[in-house]
Length: 103
Image (cartoon, rainbow, N blue to C red; front, side, top):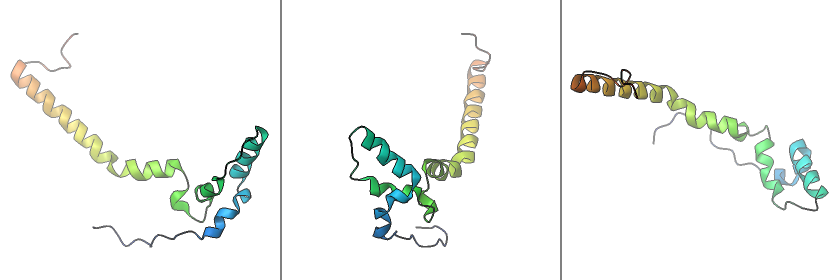
């Protein structure tokens, strides 16, 4: 299915998950949990979110941009065209537009 010539996905080595204390955000998270007597046994699974070696999964904002922005212009254009078609239809059938109506 289509797509460009992208670099193949690189699977991180399992050993990076054992050094979560090297990442300040995760070390701080572990410290906060310890202060209230809790422990997160899965904390090592979040290393990839903070590891700059794998920028394609850096954070939620990057993921959001990758999902939303490619179709943004087409979505706005489609919405404007749909409103235009509805207004023209309303004007031809009723002689007024929804912008002229007083509620």
